[in-house]
Image (spheres, rainbow, N blue to C red):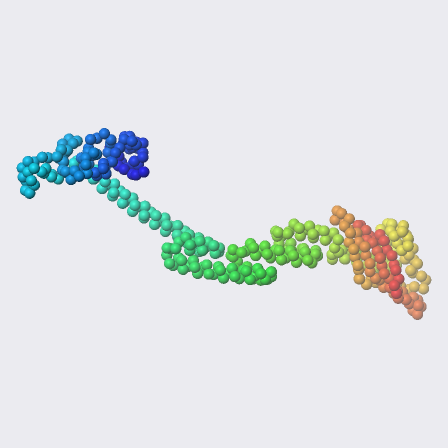
Length: 388
């Protein structure tokens, strides 16, 4: 396929086109190329409209001059001698440009100028576009913390202004140094090292990865400790952490079985009330600490009256005062009863000091207390085992 001029209107077209899109003349199969000058013209014309040679004219006659007359040219015969030309030879006459030749030449010059002008415009536009793309890529790379973005700029714009390339290369070196620091912090598996890296590089591209690593370290720590305090500390620092839901579930489960400060305070106050009732010989204070029915000493179905009877037995006629003092060595087991209610099994020791009217008969005893606190916060079981 080649680009030719339409022999009718001079418009540039493909020699394989069915017809000229400008004037509509049929092209494919309807044109021929002059073997002498290369001009393309419509088939059926006896001679080429440019060189005026017939297609079948031998090449040896290509220098024979023609005088245009209409659409044909005939060799001029001259039997006289002109200059050094023999009389029996044809005089060679230089053909003069026809109006068609001049027109085609002008068209060719105009087209050439248009092509040159278009190429210049395209080149200028391409250079402007290239410069704009480079500038945009440069600004994007300088604002990026990803080494891959900077390296892509250096690979894509090798002819960029040297000051741009120098800036990008310097920025890339800084990022590569930061990467080395990040690698060291990560391999240390130290929360403090990773936190120090984030403080030094708050806008690092590794920020999300660093926060994930800190979350993982803290989670592993609290799982290893497996205490309510550990899970509460994780939730305080990672409220929206990757393991926040799981941490809350474990905390709730541990709360249901782990004795906390509130539990200890409750148990201490209940038994203090019980023993203070004995010390003050206060039936009301004593019985307010126990449930209406309980397993008391050896009686599995004791009532509050049985507890009062026990109090009276303690205060014999010779007894001046009694002092029962829990030692605070509580061993507590917590049981979840549902609906945020709990029961407790308790063991501890208590000292008894008996002051008699006859001081020589004063006594000191120590007991192991085994008790149970029901969900109402009352003593539902109490055994006293003398140990000294």
